[in-house]
Length: 452
Image 1: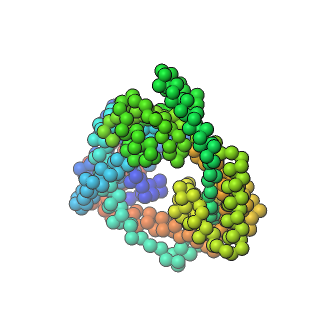
Image 2: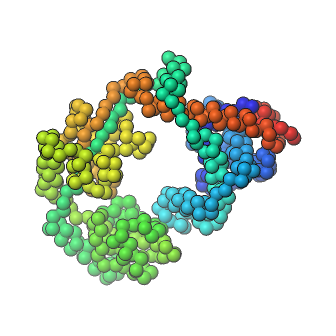
């Protein structure tokens, strides 16, 4: 039995993509049966469309590879059921909730937009995908039984690397590892007072009959929501800062709050609608201004911390615990930055934020930058110092510098071989039927057929 290289381990991450189901359905028929599982023509075509949209123009038609992947998926589901693998209802609900929340986030938690796009309610969507998710978890559980305990030794890693043709050894760009200390400038009392007075005047205008949405679009410092008249979309309890939620969830429909202070600034909130634990609200945000003098004080403060570290009065890692902003993503990693692309601590220099890139330019390993200002995602300013933990020059992959990457690739290769071996031993024992017209389009899937 031939197992396509296209397959690698998953495949079994189903196209649990809601995008597929927002499309119109193709005229349907069963094109294959694997034990008690079926493959529909529409499912095949939807995954083909999804792959083409994802990859763009491609020299290779993915149709037959996708069909082979579907056969593997259905075989794994059927085998998991035969082996009596169980998935608890709580696990299905937990993962279903997480995935629906992720999709809703794309619609700014707006249930109405979700329903308009998918043509059904969130509740109906939940029921529709529950069985799909259960099947995915069954297949993943079986996969883990097959290859979950795979390990590779240093000798296997060496052998894997030695088998790579010399002209195919990958080339790695310069990479760095970095730690940081983040400090937010303190806002002085005069600016807090000015922001509050400004918002009090805005609140008076609204209570005198001016349109909340129009004012929000003109004056709110929350640029994202201001474009929508201050609308935040549907939000579940726990997704907003506590100070905001405490007020918003206690408002009557269409009523307007007084001034609410949070870490983001000062708000006026209007509750538009509530459904159980979700609210639809809008707000006007006024952020107290950070004056030039406040920025200078922050820079001097962080520079004094840098001097303590350089003089060995305090280790960098200890300084992170005492002085870095606890809300910074790096704080819980001891100050170390993690690459959102890879989940690792290494960055290609081209992937760094420009502020960080220029801060480390010219630093030697273990050097600490001077304080520099950067703009956070919410538009506020922070000062940072960064420590260059490591740096590699551009180079061809080698075991000395890139052992972890090569070991990971060797492990993936070993898992793939084990999985293909398992398929080869078990697929011939299954009942598989494929529509003759489909088999004619993809003759390579003929090796899957035991009887028709």
